Length: 385
Image (tube, rainbow, N blue to C red; front, side):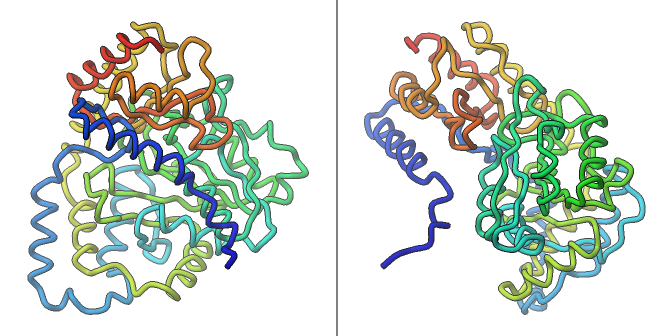
């Protein structure tokens, strides 16, 4: 029996190798510093957990959720005004989804037919590539390079490719490279989209984890609402990664087309989860700021430490991730990652997992407190790498 080539998307063999090595280390009783996966280690705020418990006690919330509650959609609109000072967003420009991981597949399918071209960053979060390929579209990779601060540089995209492209995925702050957008970059992207009639799909999962630069929405920039949509995720800001609370927001026709596709395979978000999202959107933001500062302390501990032991200073102006060039002229990120695990117990993600332009780098996740990160750096410094 033959299976679709679309199954060959996610680099499972890489993660299988890493997990096998980790099991071997743990079985041998060796200490492990896992900096590979960006799952926040901060506790979920009590008011959010209470919203879930209270909602689950109400029998009405256990029925089919065939729609997003009006209160939820309005809460997203109000949050955009409160958090980003974005005016004019209406409830029919908002739909829920179970994380960008799910939502990306539907918006790609709504925008492209098999054989169409889509512009995808390289390196990128793998779901950008997967969502495009599952829609049957062909990715054209625009590179995020150190030369341009790991930011999109649309001047490098050929006009003939841009004229054929249906959409361009932009992710700022960017996983895995840690770059943060600038007004100039956003303005260039919007002008580029208008010139070539391209839809922009902006992933804004790390808007609340910015250390240097501007923390913003795509819609803070003139013309953005005319050309695109944005994913707003609550996962990292409010430590609710397991609940999968995200929204596609923006141009009405794109949002509604995406909803039409999603409604064919999903009965909607559990009402209790919708109430959790409302609690996040309406709740206090002081904890979000404290958490940002805590991530910054971790970033400084890791980047300062790696630089002190002879690495080139990594890139991380935002997100939970530090993007580091391999030391001493090394080029094979998977081989380096496995050797690093064996010699130090420090687990990272090979850059090649995020696309060809990621080769020669590794990604660290800021998911341990500063003292543990310093321990990990000390182990790396002792190893002969």
